[in-house]
Amino acid sequence: MELDIALNKYIKYRLYVQKINKISIYNDRGALTRFNQFLFTKYSKTLDLDEITLDDFIEYSEFLWTAEFRRWKSKAKKVKLCHNSLVNHQQRIRLFFKWCYQNKFMKTDFRDLKVWNIERREKASILSHEEILQFFNLARQNEDKMRGVRDELLFRVAYFTWLRRNEILDLTFEQIFSDNQFQIIWKRARARTVYFDEESQIKQLAFELKYIYTKKFWNDWNDFVFRACSSNNHWKQLGRSTIYLTLLEYKRRLWIDPKRRLTLHSFRHTFATTLLENWANLREVQMLLGHASLKTTAFYTHISSMRLRSCSQLLHL
Image (cartoon, rainbow, N blue to C red):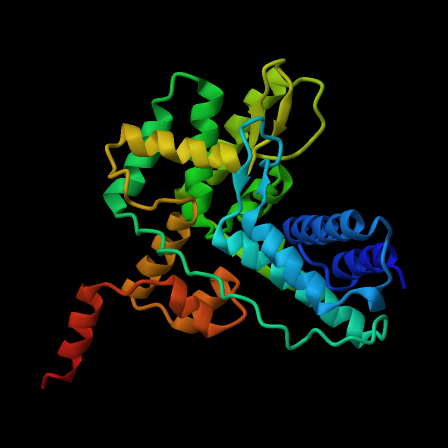
């Protein structure tokens, strides 16, 4: 079987059978297409799966370590891939080979192929309750009404609903206007229910933002909550880079240490830590965060020294 045909079959299998999220599908297609282009440049033809050898994979890995690439939709100069991006490419190609071998599309077994390990980044820092309130208040003071309401709603959703970044970006008004709860379907078709109360002010801000969108984008029938306005006054769905730049701006305006790693996931970390400090069960936190394993929950949560000190006092008579 030719590599192009196997690649299309694999992408469809991941999308419709395994129901992998669209970001992973995009990354799979990018890594495998780049590998296919490398082989086509080398051999001037599309190879069959059985014609791919270990030397091809080694040469491609060497090419990744030395080549420079232009970032997606970026006009900046070309840059080298970081260590984790290189390893991610190798792991996705190895997973594709494993799938082809299991389905008897190829005879060579690449399942035992060794690649580098992903380097764990420093954990995102935890926000204090005062800092959380500062984010809410600063967004409210924004001169741009639409952006101020949108940013405050973004921070409140991130803190009170414990959603991941991509889950937040795909959020719709229909979900928020439901009966203070909605269902999220994410990794490997796992579903979980998200709850929020009136004190979070999420529904109130969503109504206000919907009204602003109706006036600004009167001919728009899309239901995404978080949007950005382009230069020609057309809307587009809020992107990851916009969120990153927004957090950088708020960090600067709140005089937060620039070296402190702060992401949208920090609100999720803070939520989990707050629950644990108020004696929530680890299993309950796992269900709320949508983790498949308790190990992942333990990795993402930070137990404060005050909580540990109070645990030791339980032994006193």
